[in-house]
Amino acid sequence: MTPRLGLRSRILALTMPVVVLVSAAIAGIIYTSLGQVFDVSAREIAVAEALELRTDIRLHSIDDLDQTHVDDVSTRVSQVVSRDGRVLVSTDRRADTLPIADPKVTSGGVTSSLVTSLPGLGEGRYAVAAVDAVAPDGSHYTAIVAVPTRVETSALSRSLEFALIGALGLVAVLAAVTTFAVGQALQPVDRMRHQVEDLAASRPAPSLEVPPGRDELSRLAETLNAVLERLRAADAARRAFVADAGHELRSPLATIRILLDRILEERPDRERQVIAGRVSAEVDRLSVLVEDLLALAAADERAFDMTSVDVDLDDVVAEESGALRARGMPIEVRVEPVRVSGDPHRLGRVVRNLLENAERHMEGRIRVSLTRDGGTAHLVVDNDGPPVHEGDRDRIFARFVRLDDSRTRDTGGSGLGLAIVAEIVDQHGGVVVADESPEGWCRFAVSLPLAPRSG
Image (cartoon, rainbow, N blue to C red; front, side):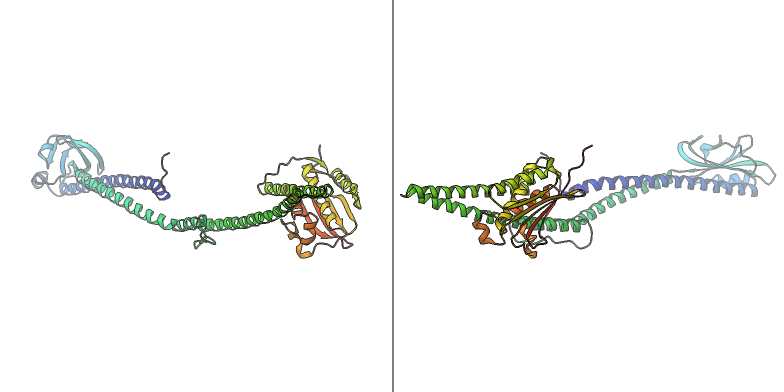
């Protein structure tokens, strides 16, 4: 794969062609503008010389004029032409037979033009001016002056050279300035990169340095700091989760090992059966714990294997409550027909976990109600045990939280049931809260959106 250029090189590669094109365009504009300026200047000079010659014709005879101008060694060519087209005076012997411009000029008129050749003088770029002149005797003549533009062309070429040299110098200066400016602008990025490398190498770097100002780099640093903060929080939660999970798994595994060692000893069959029953109970407890851990891990990855169908939530509540009543638990159920959209197995898990939590903490009674209000379903599970302390009502839905650690561990609670409830309810777009009933009982309330009406 072709190696990719660095950011500085890419910026220079993108900037320099633009600078070169702009410089070339400026040089071209200057060249064209100077050419036009020089052409206008040459024509103005030719007109001025022609007007001066007209003044000489007005003040002197043609013979005197010929003596005055015949030795003129100027690069300019001057002629005095009669009305019938005869060249009477010429400052250049090569142009003493044919007029170098059209001698027909209106009385008092002035004409000027640019030509690329002159009769008798060959090829060359000239600015030619012709004016009507009146001699002292009243005769009309045409005064013609041709100014070569080669001097201006030479100056134009020299100006173009200077423009090109200036453009190259400008490109070099801009390249140096761009390199320096890009380097200065990327210094905060380099510092952030080194700090991120420190994080990757587990060296302490609490946060990235935020460059001063409110530009894109400062906003990038703030965004990266927010991401790093979330990563640190997630890592801390992961470490705590792993530590708590290891602690929870260690307890049943240690119990199972001890019980298996006792089974291997010489013991009566009756005692062996009791120990085997306890092993089976610990295995069941371990299976539930592993299942809960897998469910929470799937929730962390947003990988719940959920279906979404219309669910008669009253049937789910009735089924789970019936299973609890079949074990002899005193439970009062009051439901009305309620239909929600979601996964029936996950919703059943919500009801089951809330009932098991109520069973562990009740003193004598459990009460369940399911109602609807507007577009929301309300599931309420009460037990006559003490309500959750107000300061713990948010914390109780965290993982491995036990408000009464000695009791819940003995009765099989892992501290994951309510966390799973919160995850599933959130996946269904609802909320779950810990509260207190009017009688002072412990209450857990779930609110879920109703299924949209078909048709």
